[in-house]
Image: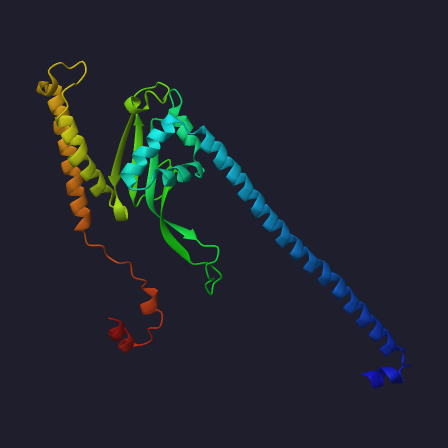
Length: 273
């Protein structure tokens, strides 16, 4: 090509060389800003993480300063029921994104219930090795967290607090106005957990109840007897439903295309059959 250019006057080689230099120069100009931009992004990301960690620490300390006798009552019940230390429960609560639900529960006419799940959740470690597809190894770890009960799958232990009135919850009345309970649904056995909770805790407590408020006859009252009978019947229904589910035959869905895609002759059909 150079020979051809020389035969036609010799200036094409010079022009092509200048053009090549210009392109190379423009490429370098493009690469350098991109490289500097990447470095700048990494620095900003690191600074952002530090700032977020700093804000999270400030938020935790502000929440810790708000803890009073009401919170201490909740913390002690959770620690006793879940077998965690009170310090562990406190750290979990003040770090929870739904911490405000506790204040809404204490408020006059506030939330009727406050739920905690204690179960395994997937948590990714920052130093976890990358898989071939670029994802990190997620390890299941048991965690206590506040929940509304409708957004997370339930597969562990549920601890709940229930209000008995519309009054504001104070440090002096929290033990009278708030009831605490738990039921275990390990491995997602919700029916079994609810059945155990009702049959072993709630029904015995109801049948031993002496004071039924305005109903002076107590357990001799026909309406109370009907109520207890209905609760017993409900528990029996739960038990039957659970047993039916456990004994059922689950048919596996089969992808038929895998077997019929390459069928060509009668012998293939016989083999597939």
